[in-house]
Amino acid sequence: MTRPTRPTKPKKMAAAPGRPRRAAAPRQPPKRAAAPAPAAAAAPPAVRAPDALPETKREARKARRDAALSPEPGVVAQIRELEAQLDRLIDEASRHDVATLDLDDEDSEEEAAFDPEVTIPTAGLESPFPAARIGAAIAAARDGGTFAETQSSADFGETRNDRGSRPKLDGRSSGTLPEARPSGPLADARSSGNIPVPPESVFDTARELLTTDFYLRKWGRLAMRGRSEEVDDFGFDPIYEAKLKPALDFLYSTYFRVETSGIEHVPGAGRCLLVANHSGTLPLDGVMIKHALKREHPEPRDLRWLTEDFIYHMPFLGSAMNRLGAVRACQENAERLLEKEQLVAVFPEGVKGIGKLFSERYRLQRFGRGGFIKLCLRTGTPLVPVAVLGAEETNPLLFKLEHLSKALGVPYVPITPTFPALGPLGLLPAPTKWRIQFGEPLDLSSHGPEAADDEILVGKLAERVRATIQGMLDRAVGSRKSVFFG
Image (cartoon, rainbow, N blue to C red; front, side, top):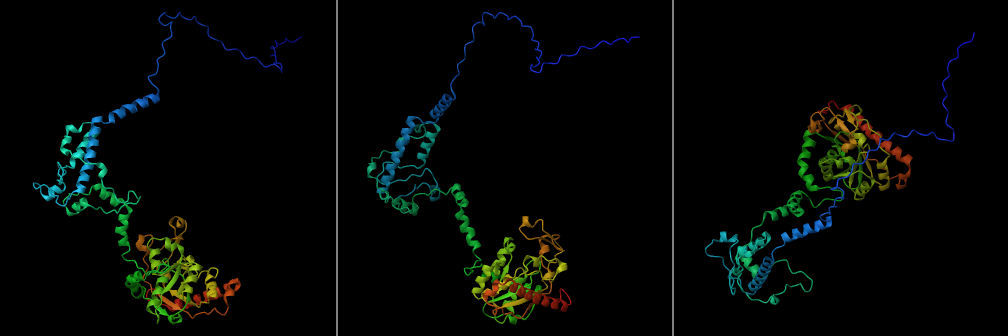
């Protein structure tokens, strides 16, 4: 038995490898027979020529504008004639005596001073010359009219004068300018009041107000009213210090009630370097040490203390500290001050000292790399340690924000119990009891200037000074009973 066979599908012919397969051509619509064109449209339409090129249009527009703005020849001739007559009148007036000039008797002096129709009668002139008629002629020429419609040119008179006989100004031929002060008969008459002087316009006043010289004259004198000419190289102003002396006395004796001890260890003359601990959110310790030496020392001396750079970027505080005696902290400034045999105070803790949290109060931070020791060794300066007690509690630092420090230009943003809750009032220091203790001086002259290059010796001496100040603080904190009453 045989099975029925299935019909097989025709196989597709594969394209030859070398011949590309032809694509089916798209069907095109059948072409329609073109309709016969009408007789009227047999000829091509005439090409419309453009009116003018852009350059020709601009030139034509400019020509029309110039023609509209250009005055009539008659008006131009009248203006030239008026200018010539004005020159002749000025020459004639300059050769005659104008001391006898007088205003019209019919008008009062106040009315004639600013009357544009006032005439100036001069001897030898055929007719008076009104000052306002020249303005009318120029206005008529600008409006496109003629001066004859407003005023006849015969009103100016006919004077004969040779323009070549005009006196020349001094300095024109030599190339030098004459003196700025006006001189001559006209200037004398103007100064005597016979010739009216026009009032100062609002534009002149505004121009004077907008110039820099006006503000330099007005505000410069006001700003320099409290300045002193005795300011030294570093900005210390004794007059400013004298003005603030009552406020400093109040802070020293009444508000902080400062007590000092061992102040006799500070020499009364010659160079000396005071090394103190730095504390308080606002660095007021340098001001109080300076005021203590002015009030309590047997031989009152001025103290120059070195401060951080950010103090000078703060408004008002930097300039006030600088005028009271603060100096930007650097080795060069300290050496210059010691060369002048002055008393200098340094705070080796720097910003880390005033940035201590309240929980770390009276714990001295690292004293840098011993720059103050190198300074004493190179210059042969005695060193006096100083301990300041009470400044840590004036503005207790709870937290500090360092993310906004770069934007505000400060090392940190303090968070205290009163700041920023109370705004700027929160920065006012608390009335704590202060104590300033001066220790016995340390003489480092036995090591010699070459010892400043010995890093090991410098580190040992710096640690010795730090331990001395820390011991003074520990004894003072242990002996006090109250922060506010001592």
